[in-house]
Amino acid sequence: MSLLWPPARRSILALLALAASALPAVAQESRLRAIDIFDAALAKFEADRAALRQWQYHQTLTTHQFNSRGQVVAKGTWKSIVRPGDPSPLEYTAKSMEGQLSFFKAEEQESPSAGQPSQRSPQSAASEKNQAESAVEAVRKYNLRDRYLWERLPDESVAGESAYVLSFSPKPKQNTNSREERFFGLLAGRLWISRADSTVLKAEAALQSPSQLFWILARVTTFEVRYQLKSVSTGPRFLRPSKATAKTVVSFPFSSVRQQHWLTAGSFEPRSPRGSASKSAAAAKPGSVDR
Image (tube, rainbow, N blue to C red; front, side, top):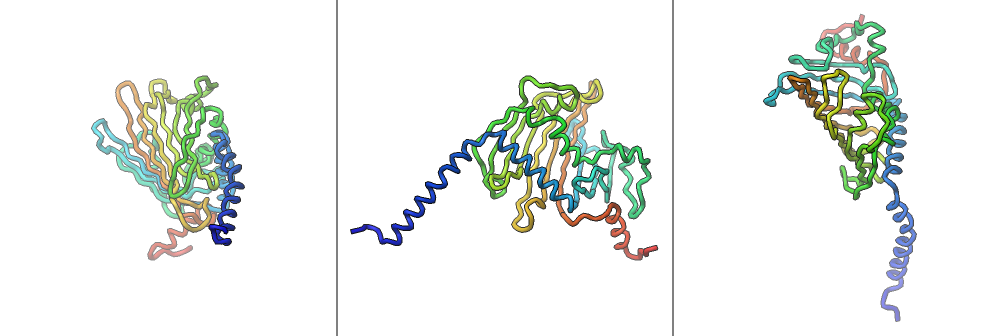
């Protein structure tokens, strides 16, 4: 006589069969190399960038500069519209600066007038880089994939998702022909990558030793950056807001420049022509008249 009611026995057998069929997939996943996970994340990142070519998002950068006692001596905020895939400079919608921030152009202290075109020359506008696109190019240009030793760490949960965790550290021997390559060759950190779709959910990196800057006597002694996607329950996953923070210290023989940066990105919307945001803002002002 069976000790189990037939439907219950069939359910258990079905579950055992399902588990047995899943074992090869689990074993295969456990054998995934760190570099394979990174490659999948890079492919997902580029696919998302392509999907975002129909979209734009709003970005806010806030920077504080501190003295040796940790007091804020200057600060600035820049709000802009980012159009992924567009090599043109960012379209700034608001700018403000208090005090003198090192490494920032003086002309950026002026807030743009709504609807007025920039007064910069075509040459200067062409030479200004879209920071978001420069970051994308850096992965390929400086061969970041092969510049590091990659290691897979135990999986973790980030923003309610199961994530692979990868660590990266500089390879001992690298070909570095530029200051940028030497800088990237000194970074180490970790990546948290979604097991569901290979999205980079979280990242952190820091300089392991000082890096020479463009000036002979200047060195970056501290560079720490953290990035994280925010969790959302609706909408396409590639339209997720994000936030990043960075801490930098640039040392000179008799002084240091200490800065903290906060970057937020979100408010995704269908792409609009450049300048339309300023015109909309002008039209929304009380008493404004279209001419």
